[in-house]
Length: 194
Ligand code: GLN
Image (cartoon, rainbow, N blue to C red):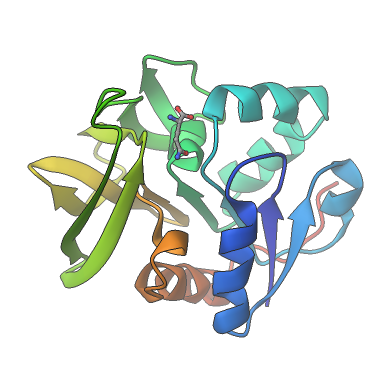
């Protein structure tokens, strides 16, 4: 199992630590050369979605990654990563537009931007840390909500795409990463990008 982690900026090292704990191999994606390595899945970390979107294009990563994601490569987006995958983005520009959700950016305002909650994820209670997080303001028919906090959807899945508005890589709970690795094991990835 080899997971590519987009490492242009933001919280990518924390995802690597979670994958280490689960015994999954991983490597950082900072340029096109990294895409020659076959990957079973891709993680888009938290950070600043506008900056990541610009860097993806500048570095020539946008098209090859979009093609891979649209072609079924398992992908897990946290926070800014969720925004990158959303077809619609309120308060920002859409990027990959592969997931049938509407992300509401900086949804909790600047003052209340960061908070912690415990809520059900796919039926199981887990800790959830939110940092200037988006929420999912709309889940289209192709996607399915997996978690809600205060009546707002904060996690969703559509086929091989998984997103959380919160940061499971910061809480030490392995539930979400375990689900993602399960998706990767079932396939869709493992070819190098052309
Ligand atoms: N507010 C950030 C954005 O819009 C996301 C914050 C995060 O990833 N922790 O990109």
